[in-house]
Every structure is written in structure tokens, then in C-alpha cells.
Length: 112
Length: 116
Image (cartoon, rainbow over all chains, first blue to last red; front, side, top):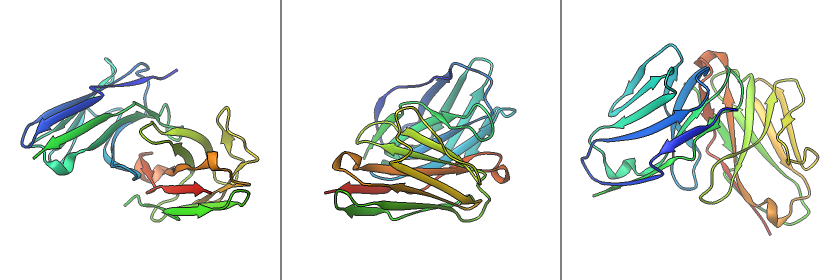
């Protein structure tokens, strides 16, 4: 059974810092991996989708890497801003249309 | 691309009534849709998986007669909470996936249900 773990559970940093969020999964036979952010009382916003054949994806200040063999992904946020404050979730499906397995998330606070 | 619209965003209903929540994929064909509920400060909990034209698959512990799911087309799924009770008050979120976006998952903005 796939399990996804995210470290740290919470993180507080001053504005401008670069930071790394970690995600690990137990079954390396994943179809893809997706990073989301969730603001309080809101739905999930997709940040980056990495297919199993890819090693990284970038979008603006965000960069996500994937190492399938070791069961790890990292989300790198450059030059953090207060608007980045949210809960970040890592999730994997086991195949193309199966339910996502989520980590418990990292709650990020960026202090101005 | 990959937009999922969920309505209503908030609903308040009386105990014993039914509430329908709609989830639409606006720019892609969603072969599979998922329904979640989320309690404050907790993780998303999968309720059911629905494939277009098929009966939904419910997770263990989720009452299928209480939470009716219909996925009649490739762009619309509905969740009906029947005979709602205060304990059904929660945040409900839908998600959709399809081949067009390499099976990335797109989420709706959620529905805050309050049963009084």
C-alpha cells in the first residue's frame, strides 16, 4: 500500500529565504507525482506535475525534482514571499486514473 | 487549461433535507472524478471514485445511499448528500483527471456545507 510522507510538517521562514520541502513515497511504481498548495478554506491548486519519466519540472520560482528509484521528491521555492504561505501537499497515483495518495502536507509560513 | 468548476461554494441547509453539489470539467474530458471531504486542519479523505457511465466506487465507511454520486457525462459529476445531518457539515472537494493532461489531477474550489 502506497504511503506518502512529507517533512517537515510545518515551517516558518523570513521573507526572501530559499526553502526545500521534502516528500517520500514507499512504492516507486508511480505514474506521476504532483505538488499542490491549499490555502485555508480553499480547494487545491496544482503547482507542478512530474511524469514518472521526468526528473524535474519548473514553474517560476518553483522547482520540483523526482527520484523514483529512491522514492523521493523535493519542492524548492526560491526567494519566498508572504503570499507563499499555505499548506503544500505532495501526491501520487498508482496509475493514470486511480485516487491520489496524499502526504499530510507541510504548513509553510513566510514572515514579512 | 484543466479547469474544474465546483458549485455551490457554500450552502446552508436544514437537517433532513438533501443538497446537491456539482463538479464540472470545463476544458477537458474527465474520465474519472473523485470526491473528498475535509475536516478543519485535517487531510483530505477520499469518499468515492466515479467513472463516466459507471457506478461510483465508495471507500470503506462511506454510505453510498447517503452520498449519491452521479457521473453521467465526461464533464459533470454530482454529489448529493441525502437527509443531511449536522455531522455531515464539512468541506467537500471534487477532483477530475483525464488523458488530455497526462492524468494530472485538477481540483474544484470546494463546497462548504453547513447543516443546521
